[in-house]
Length: 580
Ligand SMILES: [Fe+2]
Image 1 (tube, rainbow, N blue to C red):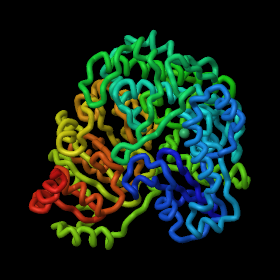
Image 2: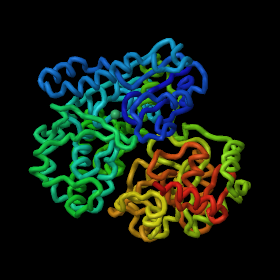
Image 3: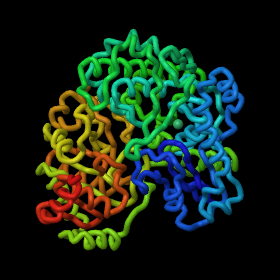
Image 4: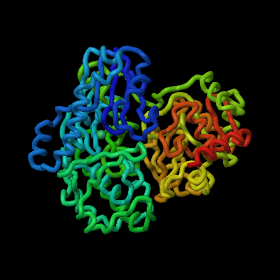
């Protein structure tokens, strides 16, 4: 029996497919239409998941009827909210008429299920985790009028215990300061997390006035916000969503003039970011400690956009009594397509559990014949190598300081590239961060690059030896080791690590292992394969990115290309990419 899960008409639209309770495919729409955080209907993603096959159930991670009376009450007290409410109602109608958007094979489904947003988040983490019984927490900006939901998962059941409703939200608190600090785009919150490491939290006292969590109740000081009265706009700039301003004039009165986007970052901006991160953590841990006390559980499953805060996640063990944590790698809204499908399978259809998510490689893959067709079509010089030689040459190129594009197997689902659509470099070279930014990524200089490490070596290099397979935890790197991998050490001494298990991604594990044999360091710098765009999906997109940027080597399946052997083509592509 098949269940198609959808996150539609919401940021990071996505689709996922379950076959007899096992996840078989999951992909974001942005990977196909190349529009970051796409918020429409995930038509291409659904087609890719289904591959022309029929499904019995369709599940969407949104319920137009959830908290209906709360929404009506909000309209009654905030007349200025009406304009945004019309937009929201239009999206709700689209959800209600979902069948009209579905492909013919999905239209024949026996039933369409509307799964409340946070139930989908909770299902996306619990039903993918290895835990039989655990505390569950979902925290985000908003979804279906809630921003927090928590409960207990047992076997194939989720029992809800508490929630926080609109207008209060820890996610909106973080978004407000993200906007204030000059990062207005949807999903920019991680930039504040990166910037925080460069500041001193000297504004904590003032920031504490903005949000307070008591037990499980997050409370915003609404004097600092306008979303409760005016709603939240979403507009588009160069195909990227931009959220309307959510903070009020009071924010300016207390914290001074907001930073103009793309203007210089001053120390006070970093200090404010550090204060906001400190306050987020204070509230996050207050909530988690309460959930731990109330449930008595020692294990925790997390999801929701706030659970992508890897700096806070890395401190859960020292700040709570939880002893095991599993976080959905697509903790943001893309992951709710998986959650909606799993919720229907277990909670609605009452099927037993059999699935554990150990990797994120749920997207499309391309055969060697397809990748080689793309290489020939582009007129590129390349060599096909046996696996051992491919790994040896690639590891040597990285050790020599080259930047390598690494395209293998199925594309990752979620925000991180984890060894299948990655750009790899030598973490031992201090200058590598600047080199990568200058030659390929053009990112803000305060954002860190991250390490992939052999799972069995993590305890030698990091102060916490707990699996982090999805790059969703930042741990302190041991002081003695920091000097050996300076390109992946953040300003606060942490690294947002990916622990790579041999049985989960054998090819990537072998590459890191070979690098260790050559250099004594079982770590690679791993960043996503893209240049200011969604992560590449097809071989053609990988080739285009390789030729357009100053990448040195590209490995596509068994084929290895060197830029120096394809210089003429590269120059042509770079010239056309920079011409007006
Ligand atoms: Fe969400």
